[in-house]
Length: 69
Image (cartoon, rainbow, N blue to C red; front, side, top):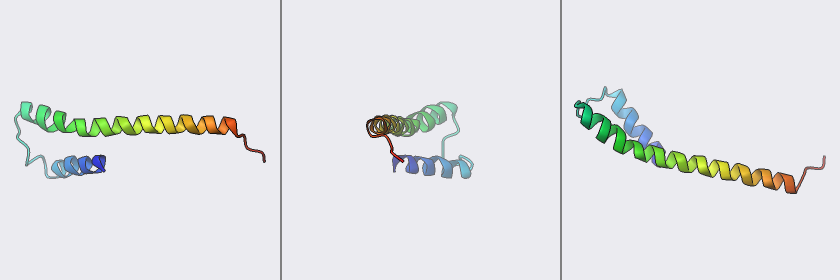
């Protein structure tokens, strides 16, 4: 849900031509991109970690119970 909200936040601003953000480089890159980017990076890393752990668990389960077709 957090990633969806962030995509909407950045996409609507990009579509509007960045008219609602301060054009000064420090503000734009540090505040708008940097601080808001944390809300994309952290959930993204957590999703990646969860996917890796799920894949590892599935591989372990597949080795323990091989298919007999």
